[in-house]
Image (cartoon, rainbow, N blue to C red; front, side):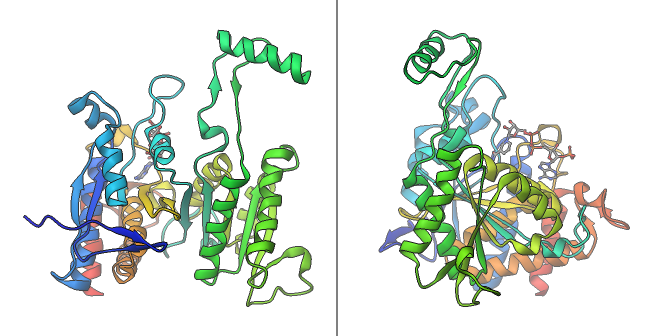
Length: 406
Ligand code: NAP
């Protein structure tokens, strides 16, 4: 058996051997169905591009229900160690109980590996069903801060002793009189966390010749957290990229094409504008909760969460985990029914991140052609006129067939 080699990280760049070991988590619920489909397409694309010269050596690591059954742990230390050791990995969705039980494994993974940028590109594939008239205008990449905000897990339960103690302290020290039966959550937004996320968004915009970076926030209400995120964003662009970015305030007439435009918008109006004039937005930089809502809302415009890929990246250390953006959809588990596109495209993002861009482009082409052929999974078929519903695995085979023809 081929044992493969590790991906390493040197001078801010990944060094990828021809046979990299890549850890994967299959995921809960529909995870195994979409993972089988995704791995078929990813391996197929690599083979088509490089025959035997390049190959991913997959290494399964455990998390979620499968991990618990085998090890009585939801997120074994071995899994975290493997993502650290091999740097780049991919995962299916994992169950998180609502309002009780274990903390989100996804959030824990992101925090333990400090995967501070959640990157979610949203693009339209011709023929996919959409609730909007011109979905081809939706072409955005969301950079969502991944470690702070109300996702930091700093919550105290209503009525608990420590909650009452904190309420007392807030009342005595700050004069904040909060109802005594309140639960409390803390929303940390740091300059460090904001800067590195916004820097990643600006770097991406510069590298990919994107027109603008929009800082999305609720700074009108949450002045010291979300408002500060906005201000730090403008400051960073001015200080670190004075010749390559321009703030909207300094633009007279049309922004110069040679510079990335830095602008901001308040989150609630952003949701409206993303529907009414999506062409005005390009790269989006925002905090954790806004980013979560925004990426699902944008995905709806291009065919739903089954279509939108995602990545969690620490650009400073070279760690990255690519993942489907949807959840475990338990009612469809094991039915070979759901749309595997989100995980397949996450795989394509991973290949691009590894510098194997030819294979990533091939996968996108395969999906484009498969959707145009109108043989699609149930979620798309129910909304597309004249489409035929096919199983998850058949859809993946079809993408492979289209890639072979490309
Ligand atoms: P969900 O699993 O994403 O499912 C919600 C609905 O979205 C499904 O019922 C289905 O819609 C549609 N859907 C999701 N994936 C699809 C796919 N691949 N193809 C087609 N349609 C798809 O969200 P949820 O029910 O809120 O969450 C279930 C569990 O997943 C929870 O434990 C949650 O915490 C977890 N979760 C995990 C992640 C992650 O691991 N990154 C992310 C989100 C949620 P229809 O019913 O309309 O067909």
